Length: 306
Image (tube, rainbow, N blue to C red):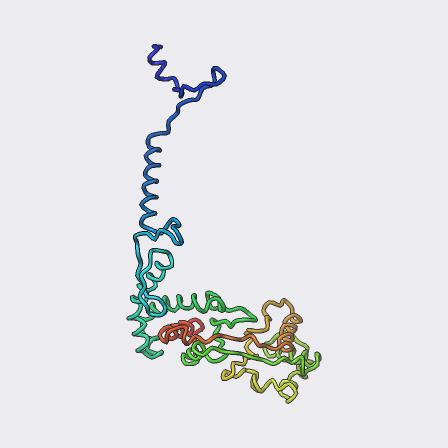
């Protein structure tokens, strides 16, 4: 092999040597890698110039890109680019695009909205978005609620009524359910009798003798349960008292109990402790009348409203 060819195949060194024969190889980076690195540096400089980036004094480099949006007070604001301003701008665009539909909903009756096929898609999309943002934290994403806390909106069982007007009234003004604590006025035996009677109304296993005594107690002036739940125990929608005969449970977590004794115990616990947590906030002032109307139709359709 020629000396020239041998030299071309030998790895070059930097010329530094230690201990006589320890040398440092000279292996330069590939050209494509070097140019890629330069491109990333240039990209970073351009990015830092256009968008907010490095701290500067008491603030930061604001960048060259601005976003204009309308805030919640109706004021037009121009701000250097950031994700919050971008979100507000996107929301403004969505509001402008949806305004003709909201105006149309506002001008129509509930019956007209429900029957208009052109509005069905808008109600489904806009209503679902409004529900997810404002209602789902309590009633869950699908409207199934949480036993013991928030009503199920999909089961066609309405505490205050399932008509358009009643749902609108509920969303607008909110609700505050209440049931007194019976452990302060009834003995444990009487509470157990009432629990067995309530269980019997929904066909749950119970003690027949105690249920008979509970029936008399339910309709007596001692417990006076019929004042709120009605003599037929089917509830009163004007005050939001539950129907005790349909085997649909909101406050007593009966479905979670595996035995008849456990189901009766769940009912007994609610009777003894009472309820003061059926609170729903009023959405008037938080949502526009058009948004409340869209939500009303959406919730009505969730549970096959009345």
